[in-house]
Length: 287
Length: 217
Image (cartoon, rainbow over all chains, first blue to last red; front, side, top):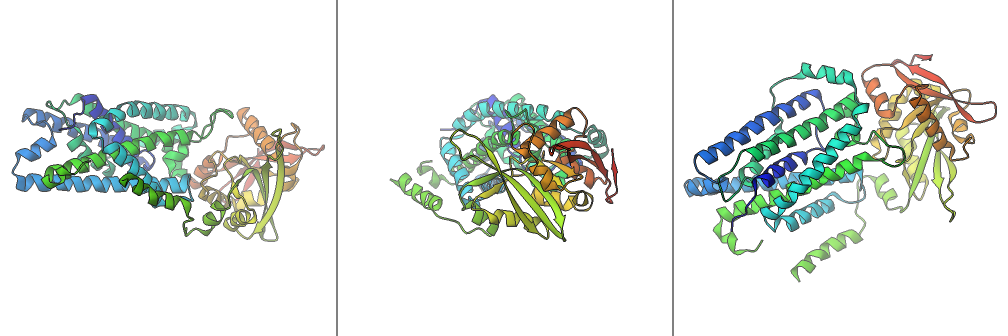
């Protein structure tokens, strides 16, 4: 049976998918501008892609692949599946490295990767519907924490750096946003024709979230960003409210790690869907 | 049954010690407890850096904390922290450290190297403050009894924090020092002295230019 993702869940999915990059972002002015430009371009791409699907009366990418000749459709599904596995491994590598450098230096990287994959497998085996259902509240929680973190550190920002930003404006696209394509291809799945509103909003929220996280790090740390391993993470911790609220970066990191877990689960379900659709023999195996 | 079998390798991996290339991390992570550090004082003597470490001990049942002081020496900052890490059975934990007191010579010529070494450690906070000792050595300032009868290093940190808020001192946490130095701009560090009654007291600010030139404000 096909998974069904409600439009709001799809939007939340795309926002969470993008926000999962929040710990590892580059923080130079050129990158900040490219995040902003990429947000606008990919919101437009999302909108046009979904409009086209609706126009041609196709529910989603999977349905599209089944309509076109199988000589083209099946390899396409396998390529997307392999790409989803690649993104999953990339998530595991970067998160395990982050954990080892910042919090758990004694835990080997492969072990923390296994933990992430285990979480992704446990969540992903229940299908995209279950993962998407959890992505919706997760998106709200993460957006709240990210906004709170941004507001609290705003007093430490340097206005001088903000004034210089327009000088760096250019139409460059951040490669990070390219990973959105497989998510966009298969997470916009529904029993009806796709709607554009929620997915476009999801991409805008996720993209603007990344832009603001990166911008905050640049405005707070300035050139010190280049010396810090994870500037976006470090910039979240430059405030303290007395002895009560210290280590704000930990709360910030927890929210982003949650997004990473959802992203990994999504990639796993996408890979499973692609391989099961492309190779019928796999369908007899349980998830 | 299959699920239980899957758990076995996970449990086996948790039980064993893993070979890690970074010897320092390996030795000290396996050392067991962490040793919380509240403040550091760094001086230069005979071409060697001398670091006095103020650690916090909480041995009594009533929760009372007492400071303990240790000294290590090395010819560069990385070795200084390495030696300090190797000295104890516990791992040096700098997350609670909020102030580093340094001599004027280090502030003028070696502050970039010091910050580079500090920033390599993931447990060091970017809000750490660096103060300069005047008329007494950094470890004398650090170990001077606190008026508030608390841990001297923590009392000093609190003092600098308050003086920063009332704008006696300019606000220069470590991340801002780093940013200003990379920009080639002057930095301002708080100066601490020993008062006549033997307590650490705030004095003025020392403004240090990129080439090591100083002036007091």
